[in-house]
Image (cartoon, rainbow, N blue to C red; front, side, top):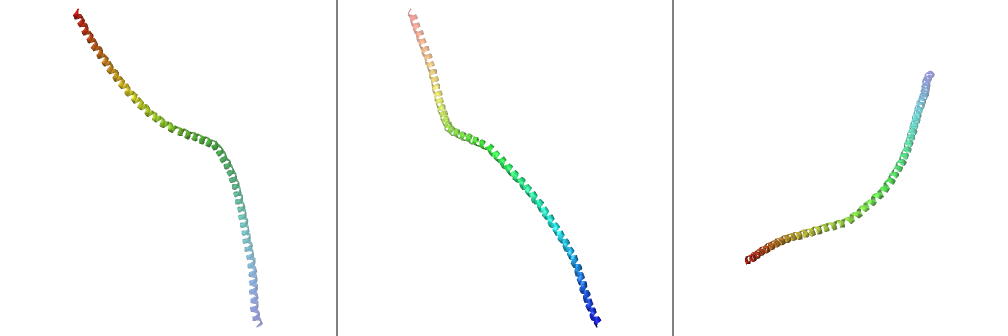
Length: 166
């Protein structure tokens, strides 16, 4: 019985030893896998960190360029405003002068139209009087001609009368 008792015990021991050995073998493999996974993870982390730094450097470079371009654009805008400002003042001054002249022109235009109407009316009156004068001169010429003709007739008649007396 001792042997049968020992046998299961030995089997148990062997199983425990096998288990321990398997466990220790498993542990060694797990450790290696864990170490491998950990080193892979660390390598990936380092690569990610390195890429992150590269991107950060690129971003900083871009920000530096953007800042330089912003300063350059601000200087260009200031130069443009400096150029536009005197012209804007001159343009505003000329526009004010144009407005002032327009204000003066409006009443002058009304006066001119009024004077043109008066001129047309005066010219029409002048032409009417001139026509009347021409008609009167024509009438006068007719009367003078008629008068001369009548006087000549009378003179001839008188001359005949005188001639007949002699």
